[in-house]
Length: 438
Image (cartoon, rainbow, N blue to C red):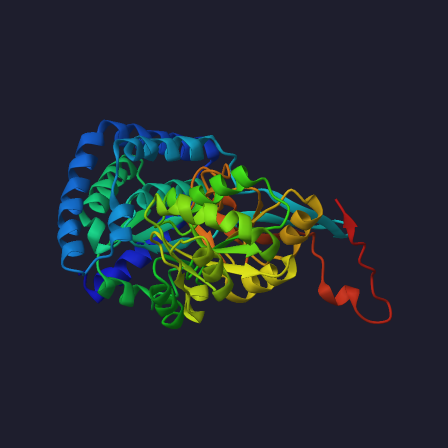
């Protein structure tokens, strides 16, 4: 644990560093990202060795019940994932610089023009659990968008996070960008950090529902993120059965511990008798435990299949495991009502061959990501072409859904005049505002 003074000093230095990174031009930022990418490639074995230490310790924690299996799954850096670390940096380097974009301009009066341009947020603190690749993703997006960042990873990824930070920091020192990326290690450090509202501009927490709520309740700093990923698929009454089953299986089993994995399946009553038994059989092959409403359980029993009875709490539960709740609904409207009531506004899908129903679903489901005939697992910043993501936001603020570069900038108004006075535009002889778009 760092001392309170150390955390405060880190935050102040990050604030100062944010002014330097904010004013780097695009070519300098891209050169920096490519340099980090090359250093990561050269350090792949070191990264793998550090991750193995974390995995070995995490397996002991899982065995004694102090760490969940999904967090262990998220912790692992496979050879493919280690290669992906450099890809994140390279992809972000190739993206257009989000800073300094003119959003609109207007002539207020002769010789006085106003424009709104994008600018960095400043200092962003990102608090996350388990997944060490977040260190690289967040660093890439922060540097490209001109922000300084303070990272806090989970204790289970201590060695992985530390080596990745060291690699990044070595390059930053060479570029004279000390204190632009920072790492803290304990939850006690986080408690101190939450009081640094003078130096930290935004907190992005990535973790359990309880942890995100703790952050929101204990800081004055704006918080961007999602507290849970209760993702739904609704199967309509007009479907391609084979397509439907493949989508459901992928959404639930491809990466069950991810926040964009399927947690609740809704099925139109007209389709339930025929497709539900097939879905149960298929998911059973993947050892998925399934819970259903009374209608769904009845259909399962009629087909000699096992389906445990769901409780009301299941509709509001993010399992992050091979568990799925299933409900039979009477209509598209009922499905949308269920999602808007019990969902977490993360990612929801409709499977249907009825385009009119699909468009209604896309329009009326109140989530950051709403899909038609596609797995919920596509909800991801890299997949969306954002290069990487700092997290997925279910907030209705300046950024929603996967948060990439655009979510790491805000804007400011620039007014250029020539001795103009506000009083000249008041009173009986007032000048008129032109308000001419430019």
